[in-house]
Length: 178
Image 1 (spheres, rainbow, N blue to C red):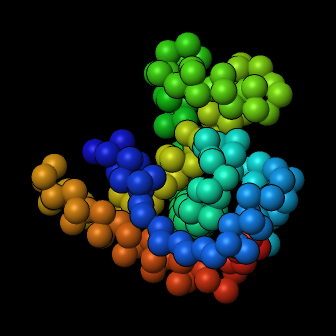
Image 2 (image 1 turned 45 degrees about the horizontal axis):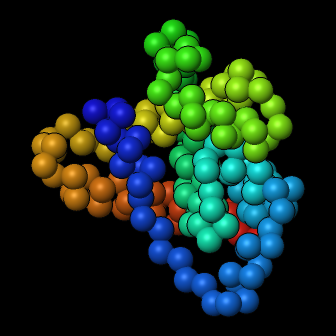
């Protein structure tokens, strides 16, 4: 169920609109450009591209998704959620070479100019940690145990409503710079 939640959270739809000027703005963005600020923490395009494969046309959507994830991580940490044990288990369950993501790691490592091993150590573990915080927060705040597998739309709605409420809560501390 936890991995199902992760998949659902990562596939949350974000409505974005753009005109030609906005499209030109984000396609010209460089990795070192700050694309958002959340609670004073600057988020660069590289921060996002390090964890996800992002085409230029998807930058606005991925910035919003990354912000959603960031506020969920911040909220989870603020409530005292600890994912240390889970991260240790994940390292044992998914050592480099057995994650099923090695092709992605290779692409990302090439993009970042580092080795696959360095990518795994830094970014895969960061991705895993962020996912763990998000999953724990959702499990703590939402009772999804009453839903069946065939009720994915209802689950999506409940998760989206939760994310929207968090966004509203953090709105004054979010700045999108694109």
